[in-house]
Amino acid sequence: MKKITILIILISVIIIIGIGFLIWLLPLFKMNYNYHVENAFPNLSFTDPIGVYDANDGTNRLFVLEQGGLIWTFNNNRNANTKQKFLDIADLIVSGGERGLLGLAFHPNYEINGYLYVYYTKIGTGQSIISRFTVNASDPNMANKSSEFEIMPPINQPYINHNGGQISFGPDGYLYIALGDGGSSEDPDGNGQDRTTLLGSILRIDVNSVLSYTIPIDNPYYNNMNGYAEEIYAFGFRNPWRFSFDTVTGNLWATDVGESSWEEIDIVKNGKNYGWNAKEGFEDLNPGVNDTDIEPPVFVYANAGEDIAITGGFVYRGSRLTGLIGKYIYADYGSGKIWALTYASEKVTANELLVDTTLNIPSFGTDNDNRLYICSLNGNIYILNQIPT
Image (cartoon, rainbow, N blue to C red; front, side, top):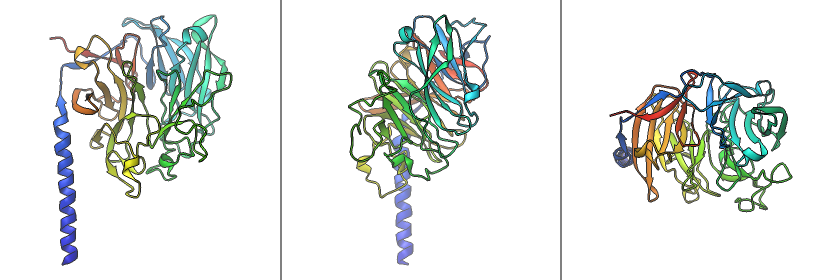
């Protein structure tokens, strides 16, 4: 009888906590149907596009990353009807599922040095490769494949999933790299909480040296004596597929794809632990880990129904969609829903559903004017616009 009483009490506590969490969460959700998506370039199509980029070199071009190993470039004009193959490394990569050509970043001085950086999974081994290429001196619409220079030693991946994939230069001029926990499910190797491995982390390196790269002296484990990887900027991630920097505040926004319960949004800070695999969202998976050492997420939503995998976007800093300025735009890959998260005074005050596209959305992109583009696996690139009134 005593055991039954204790069980009833425990169940009651769990229900109360769950209801309390929902009471906290529900007022944040709003609907705002003033927006829709349009085909940004109706005369162009791609195969598995997973990134849209602007080199910020004043040429008004966009670059589209295809998971299979190609990068295309074209004039940023709605009526564009031709595209040029900028780089083809399909023969270097293994593609499919969560592997392939996953990330692209143009050097801040690209207009001068012609450097671009890519992240791909290597054919034969599945290792993560971070390489630099150089644009053709006589043709700005073509990179030299033979110029490849591997910045880092190949990073071993124990499984085929959770590769991360985002690479981007921060406002500090350093290159940031997202790596997942190495894959499988539930992080069987414990990489998320293991600082001796690069996996499960966002890295930060300096590629502006005569060496392949150096470690910024304010990285949290610079010259440490514990065997921790000095490249680590923050750790405790499952699969931080996409991240971006707010061009006004400099905040690093990352999304972490959940295991089975919660999709997570983080503001990433130097040296912080984001919980995986001790926590998923706010949920404790390993009560033995001290919660005071874990940075809580900014926001979570339930992995349920068609909402199965979060896709990180950007804090909108354009001028056309005035109602979205300063809000973090993100999506769910499975459902195609796009939301706008309002974050002020260190907390989330609203989460607006902007549009339910039904598209599979692997990535967002921006151009030099901060217009917001959406990649879809149907081969099209869309743009977020306001519905005319």
